[in-house]
Length: 176
Image 1 (cartoon, rainbow, N blue to C red):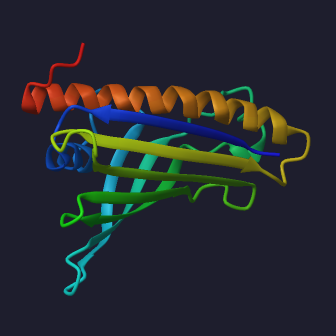
Image 2 (image 1 turned 90 degrees about the horizontal axis):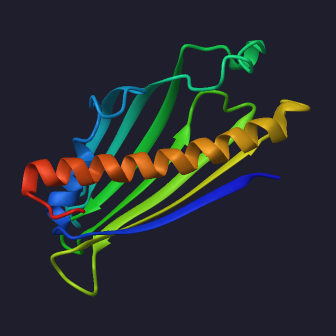
C-alpha cells in the first residue's frame, strides 16, 4: 500500500544561505534523534561544477517501544543515506534519501529540491516528497506505515522549524 508525504516551503533567504544552513543543520541540540552525519563521498564534476555528496546519518530508533518487542524493529540506531547534487550555476540542489536499516522490510525514500525562487531571487523554494512502503512484516505492515506517516509529517515540520531557527540565528531572518 504505502504512504506519501509532500511539502513545499519558501524561505525568504538567498539560495546560498539556505543551502549552507541545510548542509550544516545536523547534528544540533534542536533535534536529539539525529546523532551524526558523516560525508562518505564528495566530488565535483569538472565540466559542470556540480558537487556530489553522499552522507550517512545515524539516528536514534524512534519506533515505539511496544513495537520494538518484535526483534526486527529492536535496533538502537537507524541509518539513512543521503545523496545530493549541488549546482551553484543554476542554483538548484537536489537530494535523494533512503533508509538503509530495515531495507529488506521497508522502502523509505525522500526526494527534495532547493532552488532559487522564480518569484524573488533572494528567496529559496523547498519541495519534498517522501514515501514509505512496508513489506515483509506481515500484520505489522499497516501499523508501521501509519506510524511512519505520522512520524514523517512531524519530522517535516520539525525540520522546517530547525531550518528557520538556524537561518534566523545566522542571517537575522524575519520568521514569525
